[in-house]
Structures are given as C-alpha cells and as structure tokens.
Image 1 (cartoon, helix red, strand yellow):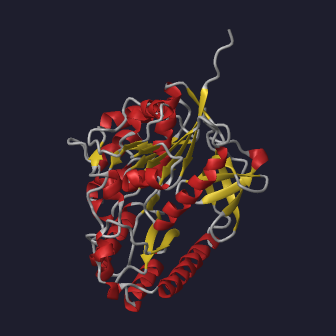
Image 2 (cartoon, rainbow, N blue to C red):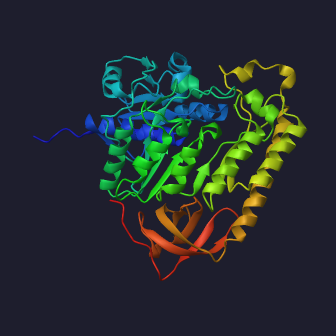
Image 3 (cartoon, rainbow, N blue to C red):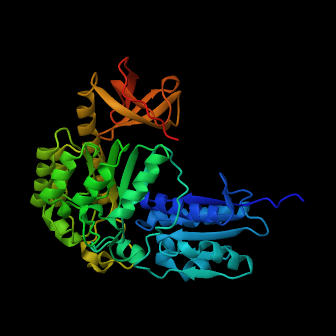
Length: 446
C-alpha cells in the first residue's frame, strides 16, 4: 500500500528574534508529530501566523494578512494565530476572523499538535494561560538558519515600562537553567553552527537562582567550537562590572551591543519608567567602551512619547550624536491598549505631524553619523561570517564581529564560511568587501 502523504505546516513569523525562535520550536514539535514544513501557504494543511504586538502597525499588518490567507485555504486547512498578538487579543481574534480556529499564546505551544487535531473536529480554541515553568526544554527546534542559532535564555519581563505590552503578552521574567543553555549551545555546535545569539526581553538580567548573566557568558562562550557569541536585548540597568568583565574576557563574545536608549531626556525616561537617567545611560556606555575596545553600539529610540517637548527631543539628538551609534531602530510612539501610557493625560499627546518631523530629523542624524564613521573604515580588513544570499546582485551577505553588514562576491563565499575581507565601499550603512589572499579558518555550517 502507498503510505499516506505527510501533512504540511506553514509558519509565517512577524516581530522580534524571540518570535523567530518560537516559530522554530513550533515547527520542531509539529515535525515530531508527523508534519513537514511548507515553504508557502498554498496547499499547506496548517497555516500559523506567529505575531507581534509591540506596535499597532504590526497588528494591523497581521489582520490584513489573515484576510489574504483565506485564498490559500483548502476545505480542511487549519489556520491559527500564535504569539504576542494572540496572547493580547485572545477570543477577540476568533470573533473577528471566523476562518481562524486556534489562538495560542507563547506559553501554549506544547499542546499545539493536540489543538490542531481538535480544530479538525470543529473546535475553535483559545490557549493563552501563562506557564511560569515552561521553557520547552524537551523540544527540538527546526531551525531556519544553518549558520547561527537563536537560543532563548529567558522569557517574560519584570520592568513594566509604561509604553510596553511585553509583560502582558509574555508574562513575568523567568530564566532557564545555565546547564540547559550550555547543552543547547553544544548541540548547535555539533550541527555545524559557530555563532549563537542569546535571547531575552532583558537578557542581561538573567538569573537562574544560582548563576547570573556573567556566569552564563563565561559558560556558553567557552563551549568548544563556538566562535561568536551575541545577545539581545539587554537593559542598561543590568550591566554590573562583573558582566562587563565577562564580555571583555571571553574571546567569543562579539564587540557589539544593542543597547536600547529609548530617549536621551531624563524627563521622558522617567515617564517611560525606564529606571535610569540620561546620565546613567551615558555612564553605562562609557563603562562598556572603556572595557571593550572597538565596541559597536546600536540602539532603539522612540520619539513623540506623551509629554516630549522640543527640548526633550533635542536631548535625544545630542545623545545620539555624542554616543556615535552605528545604527538605531527609530519609532514614533504607538499607544498600546493595556499599557500605562494610554492613561496619560490627552494634553500630553504629541501631534502626529510633530512626531513625524522629529522622526525624520532623528533618522537624518543617525544616518549622517553612521555614514561618516563607515567611510573612515574603507580599506580596513575584517573577519566576516557569511550568512546567506543577498537580496539582490551576485553577492552573499556577511557580518563582521561588530555586526556590520558586508556584501561579498557570491563566487568566493559559502554560508557558514569565515573570510578575511577588505572593506572596499559603503552605501553609508552596508559595506562591500573583497576577500584577501590571507583567509581565516573555514568551518562550514552543516
């Protein structure tokens, strides 16, 4: 008898690296339940949209996409919404999208195969309970990337910034055991990957009850065969000297930190409940740079937060100029239902046209500074790790240890390969690089 074809599952991911990691977990558990991964939604037996709730625009994109996905549904196709938007909206999603059968929050993926089976029997289910013990330790992720691995070390957040929905969608902070993180790192190295990225909402507040983030960096960073270790996203309050020493002393820890500033104004930071001042942020940067020569910094900045004055915004611009960020994710404030910022007086709202103007000025400041620093690097030699094909041209995309993007000729590079390149050109943000005769060691991703 001809065996029945295996069912297929398609997962579409929105949002942060934590969502990418969660999609890998979901795909892994579905593979164990007999599903193959589908590259496209058309023809898939299961379609899952793994969502972000950090900004209203992200949610609107997902709602629009759910409508588009109707055309890919067969008679028995199961459509589900997972992730932060699912956690935030819960049953409301089932009411507004009648073709959706499943709404599953970030702590509900263990039951995914059973929930899909129930949906085939006509059940429409919401699974959004928090599980403070859930770290999916027995799951085997089906990784999308064969060069680097996203490794969650922490779930949830205790900071409760007034603009942020994450504590509502991912619950309180809890950390994995250090030994489990080391075990997963050893596993990805055995599969041929040489770079790991540790993930957490405030990753450097990691503590498993016995070990802190400094211990974690030292343990993971010395796993044999791991050449590069990164982490995202840290909080400026959680860089004690012992963590900075570990960053400086462990050779695999890369010379790049994505350090969210959010605002350069102490008054705005206070309203955001960021729990540091402008001076405290600048001091954190100074300590990091003193300990780690050549450190590259990127950041997040929000403009138009309630009560932000032109003087407050000027403080943000001056901080950006002073710190010389290599890049910044820039956002206009987006009020999220359920956050304290929505309860601030209407009189403090910043008009959209004012926020838009500030955003344009911030973008220009960031780009101008980054372009000048990148032009000064032309002619320098850097080790790069080749990650994947570039979106256009006969080129491969690679990254330096300090997270600069370098395009190298496709005929000279393969994913997972380390090359020594000379930086030959820049658009202001991305470099072109030419491999030089002297080459770094060349391990390949499996």
